[in-house]
Every structure is written in structure tokens, then in C-alpha cells.
Image (cartoon, rainbow, N blue to C red; front, side, top):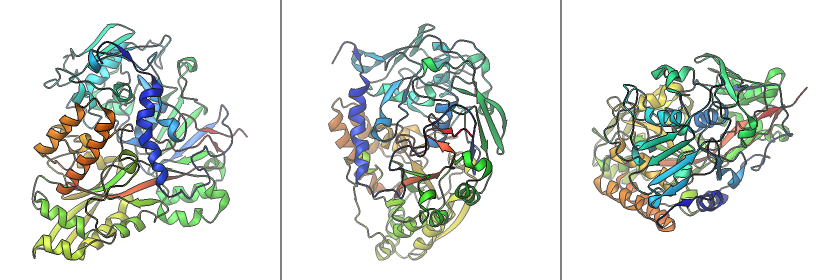
Length: 562
């Protein structure tokens, strides 16, 4: 339709949430939360402690593109034009205005989007948030000096192919700010779901006066309910209230605790044990990362402890990826040999067993493929070693595989399964805080590695194009297409689907493209997981948010008052 269309949240949200409800076919989580908030109603005050096995890779909103970190940053430190409701289940996938007064107005058949900012928006120092601050942050996402963040602006904005960011003074003409309250985006093509796109941290404000380049990671300037008091990287982050945040302008963030302390660099097994005991300050603590498989055996038999474990379906796909730019995995047959040799049942066991993870047989999670899991190859769960050997044609492979230090069991399960076919794997563990930066350096991308992808919102458009379009590859800070996969037929199909105006037809086309890419095997999907997170007895309002891969929604967390 031509003309001007105001997007009603319920309409577009409903279309996207249909896919999310497809998760219902998964096995029930071993948790008493059952999608509902754990423990008592929250109250204002107190200190919430986050126990973490890692530092944040990036809190700079321009560079923040992993689900747990986006959840943390967007809910606590910065606001975006629109955002997701702070509710469990399908309702959490609906969007509401955040900095904007509504969900935007589109014109020129969806090629132009206009947003108006609310009154009374302020930063942590009391200065007003203006439209140009949002434009500036979107521009920062083009800067090669600030790699690793969401690339939707580069993909969607018009006349931006040669733009290299604002750090040397250049501005982007396809974003207009005619006054302090108005921001207009001009796109290359119609994007019906752009109101969802602007939930991403790319569309948070950063004032030019606070620019610090790569050092902005250490001290983002707050537009949210909390600000950074201290940050000792890898050890401790302390957040305190931003007294200039106005709850009257924010329907989502509840900001219950007075202070939030993130303790970093702890072993996950130690975190689990402390939260199982839930004594002292640990009573009002939560885990940042997943409960280990070994700890589940301590939690599940204890009803009281089990009731404190939130286990939401993540909606993400875990994969083993290949560096397709060099031997041996520039050869599709070698990649397919690994596909057949892999013992996914052993990987499932390493990930916590059938209660915590389902074996993945396609890239798109069932929520994005009509609720039904695709299975292109039909390989037995334990693999087909003879087929793998036939593809290898008498060769043996000696390859390296980089894993996060927390994925040792996954790496060892892959290593053991592949050895059966003559594929010898040397594991290289890397600290989680630098893992994605390691993969993102295309000159140093390892032969094999573990990687996961979660849709930024419930649409196939946020999945396959983000990780398999060869035109998105950059030398440094390469996110998404970390396998460096380039296939002109795939790219042409992506363009064709993105030009579709029929949402239902586009959804079916993404499913067919999934099958096509699976045949090329740039990566092997192996798990659709739940996200088990434990909270202390004194924590309130805890539930896994369906959009942020089942991570606890920091917008609603609180602590019991003693």
C-alpha cells in the first residue's frame, strides 16, 4: 500500500509472535517456573548481585550484539526507540514505544520511517536526549573502529554503501533530524518490520560530546534507569540509580533494586553451588550464565531449589562452524563429512541431556519454521560414520577447533565423534569475554568453532541473511557470517525474499532457503537449547525473556526486603 501507515503494535507483533508460539512443541523445562515469574512480587530497594563467569565483551550500544549483553544493556543502561514488553511467554515478543511516542509512521511503501521522541527524556547528567544523539549512534555502527555490533543499519539504510562512520566528522544523509524530537530513516527498500529493528541497541542515543571510541565500552553514558558507578573490567561492575531517569516516560523498566553489582571472573560451578545454598548475599543473587550440566544433578532432585531455576526455551540454534575460506573446509564435501561423522546425541548429553536441549537438524529453530523442525539430511542422532568416510575418500583430516572455556564438554564430544571417521580435532579453549572477537578476525578464523545465533526478533529476516549473506563479511569484528560463506545463489535468494510484501510467503521462502544452505553446510546445527538460570531465595520477578534467548529480564528483577 502506498501512502502513510501507522504500525499498530498488536498487528505486526501478532504476525511475528505466531512463530514464537511454535516453541510449545518442545519438551517441558525441568523447572517449576513454567514460563511464569519465579518468587514473590518485587519491591523497591536493596542490592541485586549478578554472579558471572565472564566480563562483558561490549556494553557500547553500537557494539553490543549478543543476547545476554543486549538484555543487560537495554534494560539497565540505555533505551531504544521501541522495546519489547517485560513479560514472559508470547507477550514478551510484543513491542511498545520506548524513547519514541509510538511505533513509528511509515511512508513511501515502507521505505521511510519517522519517529517522534517523548517529552522529558534525560541522560544521567540531566541533559536532554535529542534525536541527533540516536542518529549519531546509528552512524557509529558504520565505523570500522567500532566493529562487532548489529549491522541492520548498513543493510537497510539508503545511500550508505561507502559511509565509514562519524568519527572523522562525516554524517549520514539517509537519517534526518529536522528538530530535536524527530528522526526520519530513509531505507533502500521497504521494511515492514522496521519498528522491531529499532529495538536494537544501535538505536539507543549516544551524545557526540561523550564519544570515546573503543573506550566507550568502559563507560556508556546512561539514558536508562541505572548508571555506572565503577567498572573494573573482568572483576566488578557497579550500577546505581540514574536519578534523571523518569519512570513516567518508561512503561517497561521497573528499576526495583537501588544497586546492581556484577561480580565477574567466577567459575560457573562455584556460582551454581553458591546459588543452590543461597546464603548471605547469595540469597539476593542471580547467575549471568547457564547452570552447568553437572549442577543440574544437584538442583533437579530438590523441589525448593528446582523452583528457583528459570528454564526458558532460548529460540537459538547452536552450531559448529567452518572457516570456508581455506582448506580443508573450502571443500563442501569435507564439511559434509563432518556433518555425517558428528555424534549429535553425545553433544546433547554434553549439553545437559534431552531435558535441557533438543537435537537441531536445521538452522532455523522450529519457532521460525512453522513450529516443525526440518531435517534435511535425515542422519541418525549418533551420526553416519561410513557415509563420512566415503565423503573423505580415504583422507584423514587434522584440524583445530576453537571453543569457549565453558564449552569444554561440547568440544570433547565433537572431538570424540569425529575421530571415528578419521577427523582428528585439536581443541583450543578461549575466554568467553574475547571469544567472539577471536572469531571475528577473518585472518585468524580457526578451522572449526562453536557458534550460536538467535533471531533479534521473531522473523526469519533476522536469522539467515545475518549469518549467510557473503556481502556482510568484514575483516575485523566480523559478526554473523563468521564462516565467511559466499554463495551468489543464496545471496540472490535473500534479495528475492526480502523484496516480498507477503509475510506468509516470505516465511515459507526462508524455510526453503534454510534447506538450500544446509546442502552447502557452512555450519552444522546441533542444538536447540533451553536456558537454565538459577536465582537466590531472595530474588523476585525472575523469568526468562523469549526474545533475549531466555535470559532473565533485568527490567523486572528485584530483591525481597529484609
